[in-house]
Image (cartoon, rainbow, N blue to C red):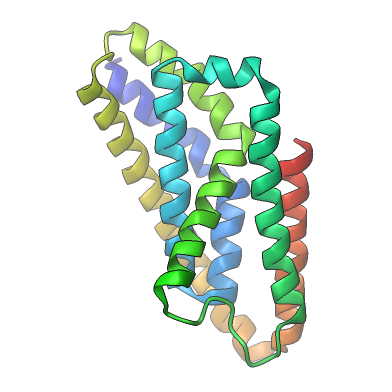
Length: 201
């Protein structure tokens, strides 16, 4: 099998299963709409390209050998989610999280997605195990790295689109059927659970 095809199939199989990233995207779609989810997805995609690059250049071994670096990343990602959870818990019923269409809120959403993405150990372990296999098959130039980025960004965009569309259907139903306070607090609890998963995995 061609090395790029091998990587693409392995990535899509691993990324298609619901995990921390997809839970964040689904919850952001329900709480703040698809624009909010896309901003977080951009941050997560940037985190994925960072992790691929680390694995490609062998820096992932350095991170594995120095667990304190990873502990700091996990703490930042978990703290960001806990802040979001608190904001949702205390929000008024008519408020929508991330409804302000400002550059500051967009930047915060992208940064938040990046922190959550880069602090999730599961993708880092995947890239650390799969990228060296691909490199060993001859894909070892910077151009090859860009192709790996394209595969991951394209695949993640498809997966994000699917989960945003699915969450959008649920969001419309919830908006008509339940109280916004209950929805905000359920989403806050989901953020707390995701934060705990990141912190203690």
